[in-house]
Length: 395
Image (cartoon, rainbow, N blue to C red; front, top):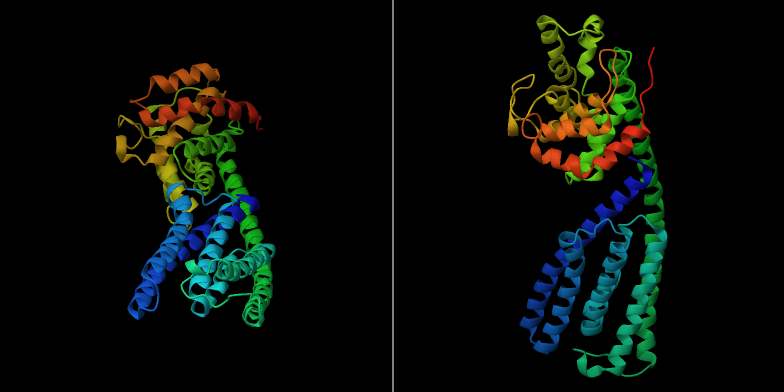
Protein backbone atom coordinates (compact mmCIF):
# COMPACT_ATOMS: atom_id res chain seq x y z
CA UNK A 1 0.00 0.00 0.00
CA UNK A 2 1.74 3.21 -1.13
CA UNK A 3 1.40 6.75 0.17
CA UNK A 4 -0.44 7.96 -2.92
CA UNK A 5 -3.12 5.31 -2.48
CA UNK A 6 -3.48 6.05 1.24
CA UNK A 7 -3.93 9.76 0.53
CA UNK A 8 -6.51 9.09 -2.20
CA UNK A 9 -8.32 6.71 0.14
CA UNK A 10 -8.39 9.40 2.81
CA UNK A 11 -9.87 11.87 0.31
CA UNK A 12 -12.52 9.31 -0.66
CA UNK A 13 -13.44 8.90 3.01
CA UNK A 14 -13.72 12.69 3.42
CA UNK A 15 -15.92 12.87 0.32
CA UNK A 16 -18.28 10.36 1.89
CA UNK A 17 -18.35 12.30 5.17
CA UNK A 18 -18.98 15.56 3.31
CA UNK A 19 -21.84 14.05 1.33
CA UNK A 20 -23.29 12.75 4.61
CA UNK A 21 -23.10 16.28 6.04
CA UNK A 22 -25.12 17.55 3.10
CA UNK A 23 -27.74 14.87 3.74
CA UNK A 24 -27.95 16.05 7.35
CA UNK A 25 -28.42 19.59 6.06
CA UNK A 26 -31.48 18.38 4.17
CA UNK A 27 -33.16 17.45 7.48
CA UNK A 28 -32.22 20.84 8.89
CA UNK A 29 -33.65 22.57 5.83
CA UNK A 30 -36.91 20.65 6.22
CA UNK A 31 -37.24 21.76 9.84
CA UNK A 32 -36.27 25.34 8.97
CA UNK A 33 -38.80 25.36 6.12
CA UNK A 34 -41.56 24.18 8.48
CA UNK A 35 -40.59 26.87 11.00
CA UNK A 36 -40.78 29.63 8.38
CA UNK A 37 -44.15 28.36 7.21
CA UNK A 38 -45.48 28.69 10.75
CA UNK A 39 -44.32 32.32 10.84
CA UNK A 40 -46.39 33.03 7.68
CA UNK A 41 -44.17 35.98 6.84
CA UNK A 42 -42.96 34.67 3.48
CA UNK A 43 -44.54 33.77 0.15
CA UNK A 44 -45.07 30.00 0.29
CA UNK A 45 -44.29 29.38 -3.40
CA UNK A 46 -41.04 31.32 -3.43
CA UNK A 47 -40.05 29.69 -0.14
CA UNK A 48 -40.88 26.22 -1.46
CA UNK A 49 -38.96 26.72 -4.71
CA UNK A 50 -35.88 28.05 -2.88
CA UNK A 51 -35.78 25.24 -0.32
CA UNK A 52 -36.62 22.65 -2.98
CA UNK A 53 -33.64 23.85 -5.02
CA UNK A 54 -31.39 23.59 -1.95
CA UNK A 55 -32.54 20.01 -1.27
CA UNK A 56 -31.97 19.02 -4.91
CA UNK A 57 -28.46 20.52 -4.86
CA UNK A 58 -27.64 18.76 -1.56
CA UNK A 59 -28.60 15.41 -3.10
CA UNK A 60 -26.17 15.72 -6.04
CA UNK A 61 -23.03 14.60 -4.09
CA UNK A 62 -25.00 11.77 -2.48
CA UNK A 63 -26.08 10.56 -5.93
CA UNK A 64 -22.52 10.71 -7.31
CA UNK A 65 -21.07 8.88 -4.30
CA UNK A 66 -23.79 6.42 -3.26
CA UNK A 67 -25.21 5.56 -6.69
CA UNK A 68 -22.40 6.18 -9.17
CA UNK A 69 -19.61 5.23 -6.70
CA UNK A 70 -17.48 8.23 -7.65
CA UNK A 71 -16.14 9.01 -4.17
CA UNK A 72 -12.52 8.46 -5.20
CA UNK A 73 -12.63 10.85 -8.15
CA UNK A 74 -10.67 14.12 -7.80
CA UNK A 75 -13.58 16.25 -9.02
CA UNK A 76 -15.98 15.14 -6.27
CA UNK A 77 -14.64 17.53 -3.63
CA UNK A 78 -15.15 20.42 -6.07
CA UNK A 79 -18.74 19.31 -6.70
CA UNK A 80 -19.36 19.15 -2.96
CA UNK A 81 -17.98 22.65 -2.34
CA UNK A 82 -19.85 24.14 -5.29
CA UNK A 83 -23.07 22.57 -3.97
CA UNK A 84 -22.52 24.01 -0.47
CA UNK A 85 -21.73 27.44 -1.93
CA UNK A 86 -24.90 27.36 -4.06
CA UNK A 87 -27.04 26.32 -1.08
CA UNK A 88 -25.53 29.05 1.08
CA UNK A 89 -25.98 31.65 -1.66
CA UNK A 90 -29.64 30.75 -2.15
CA UNK A 91 -30.35 30.92 1.59
CA UNK A 92 -28.53 34.24 2.03
CA UNK A 93 -30.36 35.66 -1.00
CA UNK A 94 -33.80 34.62 0.17
CA UNK A 95 -33.50 34.97 3.96
CA UNK A 96 -30.94 37.77 4.31
CA UNK A 97 -29.81 38.13 7.94
CA UNK A 98 -31.41 34.81 8.94
CA UNK A 99 -29.28 33.08 6.30
CA UNK A 100 -25.97 34.87 7.00
CA UNK A 101 -24.57 32.10 9.26
CA UNK A 102 -24.65 29.82 6.20
CA UNK A 103 -21.76 31.72 4.60
CA UNK A 104 -19.42 29.74 6.88
CA UNK A 105 -20.85 26.36 5.90
CA UNK A 106 -18.68 25.90 2.76
CA UNK A 107 -15.54 26.72 4.78
CA UNK A 108 -16.45 24.06 7.34
CA UNK A 109 -16.79 21.47 4.58
CA UNK A 110 -13.56 22.59 2.87
CA UNK A 111 -11.71 22.34 6.18
CA UNK A 112 -12.39 18.59 6.24
CA UNK A 113 -9.92 18.27 3.39
CA UNK A 114 -6.32 18.73 4.50
CA UNK A 115 -5.61 21.17 1.67
CA UNK A 116 -4.82 24.80 2.38
CA UNK A 117 -5.28 25.96 -1.21
CA UNK A 118 -8.71 24.33 -1.29
CA UNK A 119 -9.79 26.39 1.74
CA UNK A 120 -8.81 29.65 0.03
CA UNK A 121 -10.47 28.50 -3.19
CA UNK A 122 -13.69 27.83 -1.26
CA UNK A 123 -13.48 31.23 0.44
CA UNK A 124 -13.25 32.96 -2.95
CA UNK A 125 -16.25 31.01 -4.21
CA UNK A 126 -18.34 31.97 -1.17
CA UNK A 127 -17.26 35.61 -1.46
CA UNK A 128 -18.46 35.54 -5.04
CA UNK A 129 -21.68 33.96 -3.79
CA UNK A 130 -22.21 36.83 -1.32
CA UNK A 131 -21.76 39.40 -4.08
CA UNK A 132 -24.01 37.42 -6.41
CA UNK A 133 -26.68 37.29 -3.72
CA UNK A 134 -26.65 41.09 -3.41
CA UNK A 135 -26.76 41.51 -7.21
CA UNK A 136 -29.79 39.23 -7.50
CA UNK A 137 -31.63 41.20 -4.81
CA UNK A 138 -30.92 44.46 -6.66
CA UNK A 139 -31.61 43.24 -10.20
CA UNK A 140 -34.47 40.78 -9.53
CA UNK A 141 -36.26 41.84 -6.34
CA UNK A 142 -39.42 40.04 -7.46
CA UNK A 143 -37.94 36.57 -6.95
CA UNK A 144 -36.53 37.33 -3.51
CA UNK A 145 -38.54 36.69 -0.35
CA UNK A 146 -37.42 39.80 1.54
CA UNK A 147 -34.95 41.96 -0.44
CA UNK A 148 -32.96 44.47 1.61
CA UNK A 149 -30.89 45.95 -1.24
CA UNK A 150 -32.44 48.25 -3.83
CA UNK A 151 -29.26 49.90 -5.06
CA UNK A 152 -25.49 50.13 -4.52
CA UNK A 153 -25.80 52.54 -1.60
CA UNK A 154 -24.42 52.90 1.90
CA UNK A 155 -26.77 50.16 3.09
CA UNK A 156 -25.12 47.79 0.60
CA UNK A 157 -21.62 48.68 1.83
CA UNK A 158 -22.60 48.42 5.49
CA UNK A 159 -23.80 44.83 5.07
CA UNK A 160 -21.75 43.30 2.25
CA UNK A 161 -18.31 44.52 3.31
CA UNK A 162 -18.62 43.10 6.86
CA UNK A 163 -19.87 39.80 5.43
CA UNK A 164 -16.89 39.63 3.10
CA UNK A 165 -14.53 40.53 5.94
CA UNK A 166 -15.98 37.75 8.09
CA UNK A 167 -15.51 35.32 5.21
CA UNK A 168 -11.89 36.39 4.66
CA UNK A 169 -10.98 36.31 8.36
CA UNK A 170 -12.55 32.88 8.88
CA UNK A 171 -10.83 31.57 5.75
CA UNK A 172 -7.44 32.51 7.22
CA UNK A 173 -8.38 30.88 10.52
CA UNK A 174 -9.38 27.76 8.63
CA UNK A 175 -6.18 28.00 6.57
CA UNK A 176 -3.94 27.79 9.63
CA UNK A 177 -6.01 25.02 11.21
CA UNK A 178 -5.85 23.01 8.00
CA UNK A 179 -2.14 23.77 7.66
CA UNK A 180 -1.46 22.21 11.06
CA UNK A 181 -3.80 19.28 10.52
CA UNK A 182 -2.42 18.53 7.06
CA UNK A 183 1.10 18.27 8.48
CA UNK A 184 -0.13 15.88 11.15
CA UNK A 185 -2.07 13.79 8.63
CA UNK A 186 0.91 13.61 6.26
CA UNK A 187 3.08 12.37 9.12
CA UNK A 188 0.44 9.80 10.02
CA UNK A 189 0.19 8.61 6.41
CA UNK A 190 3.97 8.40 6.07
CA UNK A 191 4.20 6.42 9.31
CA UNK A 192 1.33 4.12 8.37
CA UNK A 193 2.81 3.49 4.91
CA UNK A 194 6.22 2.71 6.40
CA UNK A 195 4.67 0.35 8.95
CA UNK A 196 2.71 -1.39 6.19
CA UNK A 197 5.84 -1.81 4.09
CA UNK A 198 7.79 -3.15 7.06
CA UNK A 199 4.99 -5.59 7.84
CA UNK A 200 4.98 -6.84 4.27
CA UNK A 201 8.77 -7.25 4.30
CA UNK A 202 8.57 -9.24 7.54
CA UNK A 203 5.74 -11.39 6.18
CA UNK A 204 7.72 -12.08 3.02
CA UNK A 205 10.89 -12.90 4.95
CA UNK A 206 8.99 -15.15 7.36
CA UNK A 207 7.23 -16.91 4.47
CA UNK A 208 10.45 -17.35 2.53
CA UNK A 209 11.95 -19.29 5.44
CA UNK A 210 9.30 -21.96 5.00
CA UNK A 211 9.74 -21.99 1.23
CA UNK A 212 13.53 -22.26 1.25
CA UNK A 213 13.34 -25.46 3.27
CA UNK A 214 12.61 -27.21 -0.04
CA UNK A 215 15.57 -25.40 -1.65
CA UNK A 216 13.86 -24.96 -5.04
CA UNK A 217 10.60 -23.08 -4.47
CA UNK A 218 12.16 -19.69 -5.23
CA UNK A 219 9.61 -17.00 -6.06
CA UNK A 220 6.52 -19.15 -5.52
CA UNK A 221 5.20 -17.02 -2.68
CA UNK A 222 5.60 -13.79 -4.65
CA UNK A 223 3.77 -15.15 -7.68
CA UNK A 224 0.92 -16.60 -5.62
CA UNK A 225 0.58 -13.26 -3.83
CA UNK A 226 0.31 -11.44 -7.18
CA UNK A 227 -2.16 -14.01 -8.56
CA UNK A 228 -4.31 -13.48 -5.47
CA UNK A 229 -4.30 -9.76 -6.07
CA UNK A 230 -5.58 -10.33 -9.62
CA UNK A 231 -8.40 -12.65 -8.57
CA UNK A 232 -9.24 -10.41 -5.61
CA UNK A 233 -9.75 -7.40 -7.86
CA UNK A 234 -11.70 -9.55 -10.33
CA UNK A 235 -13.93 -10.62 -7.44
CA UNK A 236 -14.82 -6.98 -6.74
CA UNK A 237 -12.74 -6.45 -3.59
CA UNK A 238 -11.30 -2.98 -3.06
CA UNK A 239 -7.61 -2.21 -3.44
CA UNK A 240 -6.89 -2.22 0.29
CA UNK A 241 -8.46 -5.62 0.87
CA UNK A 242 -6.62 -7.06 -2.14
CA UNK A 243 -3.33 -5.83 -0.69
CA UNK A 244 -4.16 -7.62 2.56
CA UNK A 245 -5.10 -10.78 0.67
CA UNK A 246 -1.83 -10.61 -1.22
CA UNK A 247 0.19 -10.29 1.99
CA UNK A 248 -1.80 -13.08 3.67
CA UNK A 249 -1.30 -15.36 0.66
CA UNK A 250 2.46 -15.28 1.16
CA UNK A 251 1.98 -17.24 4.39
CA UNK A 252 -0.28 -19.99 3.06
CA UNK A 253 2.48 -22.63 3.37
CA UNK A 254 3.93 -21.40 6.68
CA UNK A 255 2.98 -24.73 8.28
CA UNK A 256 5.76 -26.41 6.28
CA UNK A 257 8.15 -25.08 8.91
CA UNK A 258 6.92 -27.93 11.08
CA UNK A 259 7.42 -30.64 8.43
CA UNK A 260 10.71 -32.59 8.45
CA UNK A 261 13.04 -31.72 5.55
CA UNK A 262 13.42 -35.37 4.54
CA UNK A 263 9.72 -35.37 3.68
CA UNK A 264 9.66 -31.94 2.04
CA UNK A 265 12.70 -32.72 -0.14
CA UNK A 266 11.98 -36.36 -0.89
CA UNK A 267 12.45 -36.76 -4.69
CA UNK A 268 10.29 -39.88 -4.92
CA UNK A 269 6.64 -40.50 -4.10
CA UNK A 270 5.70 -40.11 -0.42
CA UNK A 271 4.54 -43.11 1.55
CA UNK A 272 1.07 -43.04 3.07
CA UNK A 273 2.49 -42.17 6.50
CA UNK A 274 4.68 -39.44 5.03
CA UNK A 275 1.72 -38.06 3.09
CA UNK A 276 -0.33 -37.85 6.30
CA UNK A 277 2.48 -35.90 7.95
CA UNK A 278 2.71 -33.56 4.95
CA UNK A 279 -1.06 -32.93 5.08
CA UNK A 280 -0.70 -31.72 8.65
CA UNK A 281 1.08 -28.56 7.48
CA UNK A 282 -2.31 -26.90 6.92
CA UNK A 283 -3.20 -27.41 10.60
CA UNK A 284 0.25 -26.31 11.74
CA UNK A 285 -0.11 -23.16 9.67
CA UNK A 286 -3.50 -22.34 11.17
CA UNK A 287 -2.16 -22.97 14.68
CA UNK A 288 0.76 -20.63 14.10
CA UNK A 289 -1.40 -17.78 12.80
CA UNK A 290 -4.88 -17.97 14.31
CA UNK A 291 -4.02 -16.16 17.54
CA UNK A 292 -1.97 -13.43 15.86
CA UNK A 293 -3.63 -9.97 15.97
CA UNK A 294 -4.58 -8.08 12.83
CA UNK A 295 -6.75 -8.73 9.79
CA UNK A 296 -3.87 -9.90 7.60
CA UNK A 297 -2.91 -12.63 10.06
CA UNK A 298 -6.52 -13.77 10.39
CA UNK A 299 -6.81 -13.99 6.60
CA UNK A 300 -3.50 -15.85 6.51
CA UNK A 301 -4.77 -18.36 9.08
CA UNK A 302 -7.77 -19.14 6.84
CA UNK A 303 -5.58 -19.52 3.77
CA UNK A 304 -3.04 -21.67 5.60
CA UNK A 305 -5.77 -24.03 6.77
CA UNK A 306 -7.94 -24.28 3.66
CA UNK A 307 -5.65 -23.85 0.66
CA UNK A 308 -5.63 -27.61 -0.07
CA UNK A 309 -9.41 -28.01 0.06
CA UNK A 310 -11.30 -29.10 -3.04
CA UNK A 311 -14.70 -28.03 -4.33
CA UNK A 312 -15.81 -31.70 -4.42
CA UNK A 313 -14.79 -32.33 -0.79
CA UNK A 314 -11.75 -34.52 -1.52
CA UNK A 315 -9.19 -32.13 -0.07
CA UNK A 316 -7.01 -32.47 3.01
CA UNK A 317 -9.73 -31.67 5.57
CA UNK A 318 -12.79 -32.81 3.60
CA UNK A 319 -14.38 -29.36 3.36
CA UNK A 320 -16.73 -29.04 0.39
CA UNK A 321 -18.21 -26.31 -1.81
CA UNK A 322 -19.42 -23.27 0.10
CA UNK A 323 -17.97 -24.69 3.33
CA UNK A 324 -14.61 -23.52 2.02
CA UNK A 325 -14.07 -19.80 2.49
CA UNK A 326 -14.14 -17.82 -0.73
CA UNK A 327 -10.59 -16.50 -0.34
CA UNK A 328 -9.35 -20.08 0.10
CA UNK A 329 -11.08 -21.03 -3.15
CA UNK A 330 -9.15 -18.20 -4.80
CA UNK A 331 -5.77 -19.27 -3.48
CA UNK A 332 -6.37 -22.90 -4.46
CA UNK A 333 -6.41 -21.89 -8.11
CA UNK A 334 -3.40 -19.61 -7.66
CA UNK A 335 -1.36 -22.19 -5.75
CA UNK A 336 -2.11 -25.11 -8.08
CA UNK A 337 -1.46 -23.04 -11.21
CA UNK A 338 1.93 -21.96 -9.90
CA UNK A 339 2.80 -25.49 -8.73
CA UNK A 340 1.96 -26.88 -12.16
CA UNK A 341 4.08 -24.36 -14.05
CA UNK A 342 7.13 -24.65 -11.78
CA UNK A 343 9.95 -27.19 -11.96
CA UNK A 344 10.73 -29.01 -8.72
CA UNK A 345 13.28 -31.65 -7.72
CA UNK A 346 10.62 -34.31 -8.16
CA UNK A 347 8.94 -33.04 -11.37
CA UNK A 348 9.29 -30.92 -14.47
CA UNK A 349 7.16 -27.82 -14.81
CA UNK A 350 4.24 -27.80 -17.22
CA UNK A 351 3.80 -25.20 -19.93
CA UNK A 352 1.50 -22.22 -19.33
CA UNK A 353 -1.04 -23.66 -21.77
CA UNK A 354 -1.02 -27.13 -20.20
CA UNK A 355 -1.49 -25.64 -16.75
CA UNK A 356 -4.36 -23.49 -18.02
CA UNK A 357 -6.10 -26.55 -19.48
CA UNK A 358 -5.65 -28.45 -16.22
CA UNK A 359 -7.29 -25.69 -14.18
CA UNK A 360 -10.20 -25.44 -16.63
CA UNK A 361 -10.61 -29.23 -16.77
CA UNK A 362 -10.96 -29.46 -13.00
CA UNK A 363 -13.60 -26.74 -12.72
CA UNK A 364 -16.43 -28.09 -10.60
CA UNK A 365 -14.31 -30.87 -9.11
CA UNK A 366 -11.11 -29.45 -7.64
CA UNK A 367 -11.97 -25.78 -8.14
CA UNK A 368 -14.96 -23.49 -7.65
CA UNK A 369 -16.41 -22.94 -11.18
CA UNK A 370 -16.97 -19.23 -10.46
CA UNK A 371 -13.30 -18.79 -9.55
CA UNK A 372 -12.22 -20.68 -12.66
CA UNK A 373 -14.26 -18.27 -14.77
CA UNK A 374 -12.37 -15.38 -13.17
CA UNK A 375 -9.12 -17.22 -13.86
CA UNK A 376 -10.05 -17.64 -17.53
CA UNK A 377 -10.99 -13.99 -17.98
CA UNK A 378 -7.76 -12.85 -16.30
CA UNK A 379 -5.42 -15.48 -17.70
CA UNK A 380 -3.32 -12.92 -19.57
CA UNK A 381 -2.46 -11.28 -16.24
CA UNK A 382 -1.45 -14.66 -14.82
CA UNK A 383 0.82 -15.20 -17.81
CA UNK A 384 2.43 -11.77 -17.33
CA UNK A 385 3.09 -12.43 -13.64
CA UNK A 386 4.55 -15.87 -14.36
CA UNK A 387 6.94 -14.38 -16.90
CA UNK A 388 7.82 -11.34 -14.78
CA UNK A 389 8.75 -13.34 -11.64
CA UNK A 390 10.84 -16.36 -12.74
CA UNK A 391 12.16 -18.85 -10.21
CA UNK A 392 15.57 -18.41 -8.64
CA UNK A 393 17.56 -21.46 -7.67
CA UNK A 394 18.08 -21.59 -3.91
CA UNK A 395 21.12 -23.42 -2.56
